[in-house]
Length: 144
Image 1 (cartoon, one colour):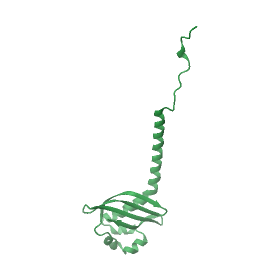
Image 2: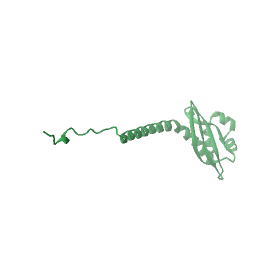
Image 3: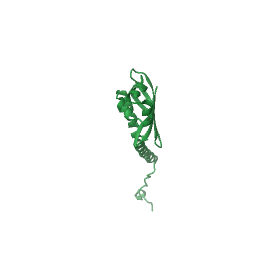
Image 4: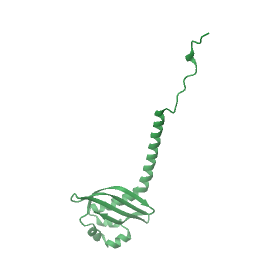
């Protein structure tokens, strides 16, 4: 006798681990890892960047008292007062800036990036920050 209904057996197994599914799982894992890394870094570096932006914003707007309030006691001793900070900044009053490097080691932080000064000149800005009483404060700066 001949078996005329060979197709009526068990359905063919579907393979879950096809190349397309493996690629999708890898991409999903990378997205989860990248999102987690972004959250960790933004949480750790966010307050540092905010303090640096606030300091630079005070300089940009001519609010030297505001910028002076964001400095460490050591920098305050060096510049004397808000007018001394204004003299230290001189012609390097920032207009726009962007941080390309951010780092924290223990209670010390560093921001470095590009800056456009009033008048259109471009240069580099570097801020060294310390954590003083739970807040990031500017310990030193370089505008050139």
